[in-house]
Length: 94
Image (cartoon, rainbow, N blue to C red):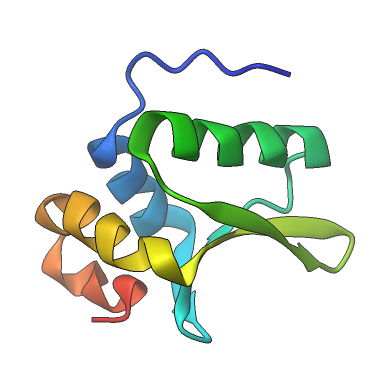
């Protein structure tokens, strides 16, 4: 599966984090349990290709979540922080 995401940018990711993201265990996660494994892998590839972020799959029950690599956290924060409402900063571990 290949995602075409001409308009996927840091603003899109900021809204995704505000809706389905959270901070835990020193990393940022995106809830993606309703996606197939192939879709989650395609999303991880998109995050890397479009924004230069490294992420992996974290198994959760019968589904999976996206977990950002700790080495990408600083870059992720820099990208999305300006676009987050302050009430959501905690989702970045701030």
